[in-house]
Image 1 (cartoon, one colour):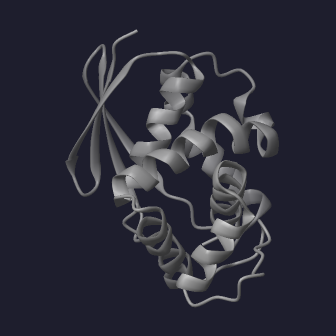
Image 2: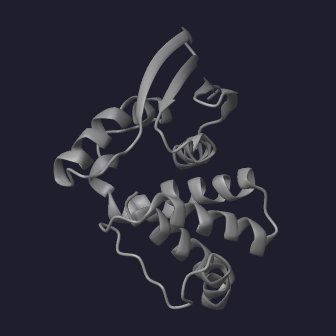
Image 3: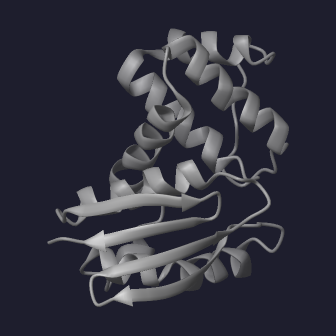
Length: 174
């Protein structure tokens, strides 16, 4: 996967808990303490997942807690700074979530070797969206964390339920 995920995670940990904690996490993941990731570089999926597992271990967090923290930080701090163009014209959580395939297509156009997830959408009713997460990486918990972050960003109450390992139900409550 692209280094942007590990870069954001490192920034989150360094800002909230200190650079020493991030270095401890890297070391626990079997990487040098001074490892840095470039946002555009390809990082081995297994290495990234070792770092994520190490975050859980060192910080005493569950995978769900780590994914939620990442999603909140990604969507509310990191992405608005790095990917602000993708926020333009999106005035609600609904608009942003429905734009994800278009955003990811644009990412691939700029970085052809990127492999972001794709989504299928099914409306259960006018307030309930089922999103099918399509990715071989199995990071649906991180997607759920990002959806929570989308709700925070737009100051909207969302109810999010993981239906399966690749399906999420999102209710737009206001």
